[in-house]
Structure formats: structure tokens, C-alpha cells
Amino acid sequence: MSDAKRRPPSSTDVAALAGVSQKTVSRVLNGEPYVSDEVRERVLAAARELGYRRNAAARALHLGRFHRIGVASIGSSLYGPSSLLVALERRARQIGYAFTVAFTGEGDGVSNAVESLLAQGVDAVVVSDPMDGPVDGGQELRVDPDVPVLTFRPIPGLDGPRVVVTGASGVDAGRQATEHLLRLGHATVRHVAGPHRWWAARDRARGWREALAAAGAPEPPVLEGDWSPASGYAAGRVLAADPEVTAVFAANDDMAIGVLRALAEAGRAVPEEVSVVGMDDIPAAAYLSPPLTTVRQDFEALARHGLALLAAEIERSPGGPAPGDLPAHLVVRRSTAPPTQP
Image 1 (spheres, rainbow, N blue to C red):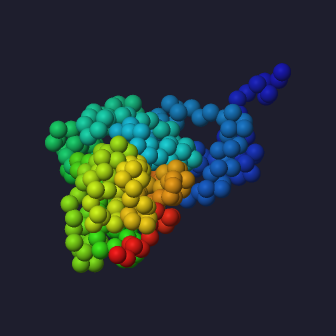
Image 2 (image 1 turned 90 degrees about the vertical axis):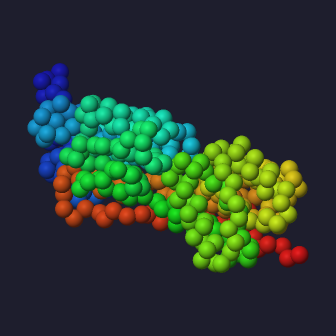
Image 3 (image 1 turned 60 degrees about the vertical axis):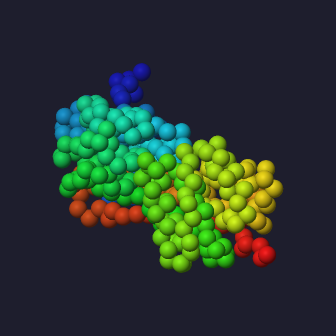
């Protein structure tokens, strides 16, 4: 075999196979913005086909960057956090960044996780899960001001010129779910909330309250769960025993499933007697009996928008996307209906 055939593939080979310039290959492999998704995927596909591997250590020395994004994550198996983590990993790979995760546990160890990521060599940090107030036993989360940070809601004590915030508003989601039930004619809506220590739970409860207040509807007591079907079932048993209950908004689909089970056991028909709305649109939601009305968050869009913001900060590129919340989408199925008239 000749030396030419034995030599490893180069970026020039990738450019030729992808039908683009070598500069475009460099921009894709360096994760620079302003390259279309179609061109980026074509270049990455050509690199995979050729078995092209970049010399990460040499590139880091040359660019002063590692081309790696670190994520501090609770590591929860809950649908929302795990779906967001998968979407972040997929999008990071698409834009040419390696991806490193440090797990924190619920509400503690965030600073330690961030320090671990920085020690491994990352260009930026994502705090991916909803945090519930001051982290690490009340200490503020501090990150080197030169390191860009992406969060999906404001974190108390974490701010600075390179902190970017985006997200899917839990307030808007809670409001949409509650307004849907009120528009159907229900006098008020009961709420099965997530754990109060989670900002996401507080945001969804705030949206529920705002919708009730705007409609002049009474605000009944909140029942707090822990995101699990079992906690939704326990709350559902309380609600099923109250004949005045005609509408329930559960802060995630898993708790809504528990509510549905409790109502069925109590002989309270859904939606004829009680309407139920969840949140997240888990894959099973459309196949429940009845199919569950829910509020969907687009985790792929959230990851795409968030990492575009972060890449612009890493590259210090002007004219990047604007921060801001992405809309949630109400998905109406057969678990909701107008209340039965007495």
C-alpha cells in the first residue's frame, strides 16, 4: 500500500467529499456560527465517512479553546431534565463540540460540578436543570467571569456579562393549562404542584395563580407532589373525594397519570366529571385512556437556541440570537371537556 493511501484523512479530503471550501470545513469543525444546518451536517457526515479525527490538544493550543461544553446536571430520570440533556448532547455534537457532564444531585454540589468541568477543560458551562434558589447550602454559584454560562432560568447570585439565560417559560405553561380549563367553563382549577424547592414547580404554580386571578376564579389550596405518579395518585385520592372538583392541572404528566388512576378507582369519570391537564407531553400521554391533554415543551428547540447563544459567547460573535423564552404549546386531547351541568 502506498504512503498516500496510508496517510490519515485531512480537512482537505473532508472539504472535497462534502463539496465545500476548506474554510467552511474549518468553521464547522470549530463550531463557528453562520453555517447552515444542511452544510454543517454534510461536512460532519463527510468527516465520519472518511474517519477524520481532529487533534483536539493541538487545536486547543492553537485556538486557546478546548471546543468542549460542560454541563452541570442533576442527572434526574424525570422526562423533562433527561430529554433536555439528550437534546443538548445531540445539538452540541451537530455544531462540532465535545460534551462533558458532571452530575450534581438534587440542589447541591453545583459549584463542585462546575469546578470539575473547568478543571477538565471546557469553553463554556451549561447549568441544565431548574435550580431552586441559592445552591450549595445557600452559597452563591460563582463561575470565572471569562467563562460563558448558559442557564434555562435566572439563578439567584449568578449573573455577569457572559451569563446568558433562555428557557421555556413554566409560568406561560401553567397559565395556558389553566386558561384552557377555565375557557371550557370550569369555575376553578385545582393544582397538583411539583416540589416547592424546584423553580420549575414554582413557575408553573405561578402561571396557574395568574390565570385564576385574571379570570376572577377562586384560588383553591395546592396539593404538592414530588413529580412521581405515586404522588399524583395520593393527591388524586384527595381530589376524587371532593365532589366540587371538576378540573385539575398537574405540574407534569407523571403526576397527571397518578391523578387519572385515583379518579378511575373512585368512579369519577374523565373528562365527564373531572378534566385533567398535565405538562411535558411524554410519549405515553397520547396513548392513555383517555389521551391526556398536556403542555408540550420543545426540548430540541430549547437546546438549539441555547447552544446558539452559548456558541456566540464562546466565539464572541456579534449578532447572535437574542435570549428569551421559547413558547410552550398546549396539546388538547380527550382528558378535558366542559363541566357536566348539574
